[in-house]
Image (cartoon, rainbow, N blue to C red; front, side, top):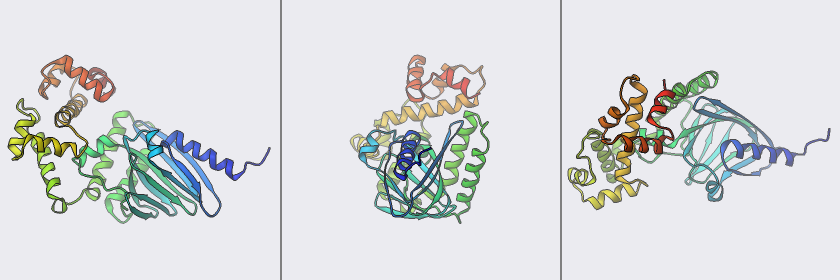
Amino acid sequence: MACVSEQERFQHWLAQINAVCGSFAARPMNGEFFGELESTWTGNLKLSTVTAGGVNLFRTRQEIKHSNDAWFYTVFQLEGVAGLEQDDRQITLAAGDISLIDASRPCSLYWQEKSRQISLLLPRQILEQHLRFQEVSCAQKLSHTLPTVQLSHRLMQESMSNPTLSEQESEAALEAMVCLLRPVLQQRESTLPRKERQFKSVLSLIDDHIQAEHLRPEWIAAESGMSVRSLYRMFADKGLVVAQYIKNRRLDLCAQMLRATRDEEKLAGIGYSWGFTDHSHFSTAFKQRFGISPGEYRKRHR
């Protein structure tokens, strides 16, 4: 059998990365190239184990255009050392460290010598809801010395070793992962700029009145001491629309209720309790958000 060249191994590895992890480009570095990839699906958990050396893997705007950006890559360093860059931040990960990469922005990973890491796809929706749309600190080194980081590693490894996890159980594992990492990802309230504190206050106001019929932009603006135009601009700066945010928040709460209630609970009643007075509108909006009807969603999460 003919010997496979290093260039052929390099191209094969990059093709695997693109098929499993999204669109990336790569270039060799000094030293011998090494590249392996193993992917694991456990319910809703998608994990990729990357073993690499002598290579720089990166995403530019060109690659992002041809890839799904509705994720964050949660990088768990297992062995060796890896370099990571995003948003003008440069860090070095050692064994046990964790970091986040935003799939919607350019990034670069360096493996000078052979090392191994696991990448967990973390849905943007889950992370942003938990952090209340504060900016997520990417390319931030979460040290292996932190107890929450150590617990996150254990949760990831336990999840990987249990291939029988249901969709509901794996979704709970993702939620638990975010809850564990939130204290080290979230900025302290006192360090937030005034606009961020105001935005967080508005989100709390919305949550406190999420079931109320009067929850409209005009009322929110008046309660928050700002103009409606300023409210719209505040949400637009986050890539959001006020009314859409309220609707999605209500739909997320409907989904939580569907997972928790018995089959006897009428779907229309669940929608109504969270502000959807028309069942047809509720079903249509729910399917647009989650890809399936409320009834099918409840069946899948039994």
